[in-house]
Amino acid sequence: MKNITVSALVIQHPSKPALLMVRKKGTTSFMLPGGKPEPDETAQDTVVREIREELGLRLDESQLFFLGTFTAPAANEARHTVTGHVFVCETVPADLNIDAPQCLQEIEDIDWFSYVDLPPDTAGRQFAPLTRTQVIPALVKHWSLGRKEQG
Image 1 (cartoon, rainbow, N blue to C red):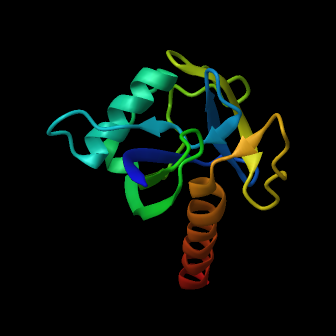
Image 2 (spheres, rainbow, N blue to C red; image 1 turned 30 degrees about the horizontal axis):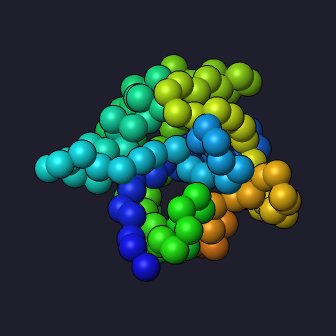
């Protein structure tokens, strides 16, 4: 199996337990926004550039924290795995229209999906294994640990 390396970003809805996910043109899988690095680009530089290109958002790098590196079967490329360096945006980007998020370039669809009760996959809509099986459990664990530390 070949491996694909990406950087991805978690943006949480400010008033409900939902994550912003995108679907690329010609695919059926929703995933976290992000993409592949350019030569000599750090994982954080990649996510900042990709979010600007895909969603038109300018990220405040001081609001990003590194959640971790995760590997799972690739959503849109058979016989490939994907290794994602995943960052979390601690605040909603200032230029994100929460009620009507916009997508650019190769992104065909964008929406908020519950991370508490992610809908099941269907023939017409799936969720990337990296997001479903790796990132969401890590987020839930991270956020529950954060609440324990505050309480």
